[in-house]
Length: 241
Image (cartoon, rainbow, N blue to C red):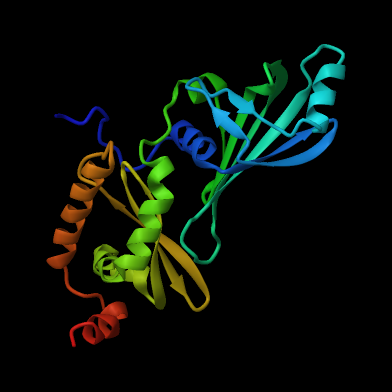
């Protein structure tokens, strides 16, 4: 069965934003009533609207009921945190500005402005583009996949690091998996005085875990044919005993 997504090196900003909101376990809501941290109390619809399920005594309900026009403004903030322990674990932050409306026993948030901050800066996303985008199919499984790779297969991470350009490994003291999506795997290269990231792109997008396994096997095969970088020579040598 052919993959339904075209090849590309990395997810588009709108897709990345949808993935952050879909996979996040919590979000912060700032409105006229103040700021509230909601944990496990939101879901995202297919068109990008956010359903909030705050506690019954939340000030958000009162603010929505008492708003002059019935739709108070609010800002939602999501933090994308790397599941694997490493330096600078916040990979991205997503802000949605919009309106709150009552929806049954909860609140519905309708975004009118979208901004995503990644390591390379902040990008403003058209709300219609955000609504039309789909979250990465691996987003909700990413935490489990990355922690398994880091904890159960450190040797595979070491081999994959062979695919990083030697200049990217200068001064490396540790390499850890940072992120994975249907387009590729990102490794975090930690140094004594900082860190950098290296992207390993799949030859074809992966739409599920089965396809991801095949894509990872291709990368590992490529890594097996690559020479061990000098920065990792000691680790490679120690692992041969």
